[in-house]
Amino acid sequence: MTSVDVSAPPLAPAKPIARFTAAAFGWLPLSLAMLALRFAVAVPFWKSGMTKWDGFLNLSFGAQQLFVDEFKLHLFGGEYSYPFPETMALLSALGETILPVLLVFGLATRYAALGILAMTAIIQLTVPDGWANFHLPWAAMALSIMTFGPGRIALDSVLGLDRPRR
View 1 (cartoon, rainbow, N blue to C red):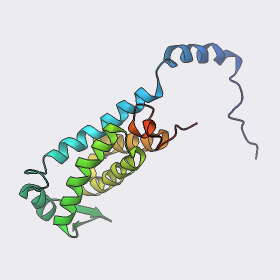
View 2: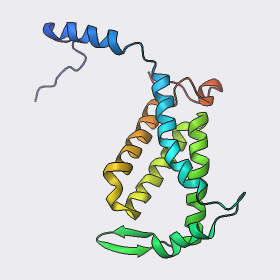
View 3: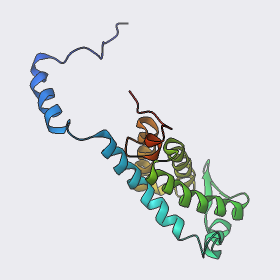
View 4: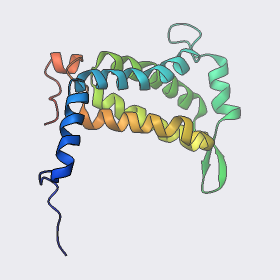
């Protein structure tokens, strides 16, 4: 089996296209794109989290009832109640409140993105029909943040807690 050298220079006809692409898009800083991604994935989780509270650390009755009565895990073709629904409601509300803040400030960013990815997986098991419009983009954004890091416009960068990917 032969291997292909992916670091090989582009074919001669592709060079002008590669130069044009670099000139057209090379000015965009990766840090700005990462900041936009962090905000984009944080907003829907923050908005959802804000609906689950009736005051400071006072979980709303409606949020608890969602996990008791409405939300079910869809596993292997069956629907199953959440174990410890009140605890799951609290953890969900905390995650939807804390993780977006961490993402926006760029603090513990990769870990916050991992938390968002885990929540997205659980949400997918709860609402399986939402994968194309919501869950897939959220997962892709979280994976991108985990892969590329927060960028330089982040507390992680300022405090030296995360190094940019080389």
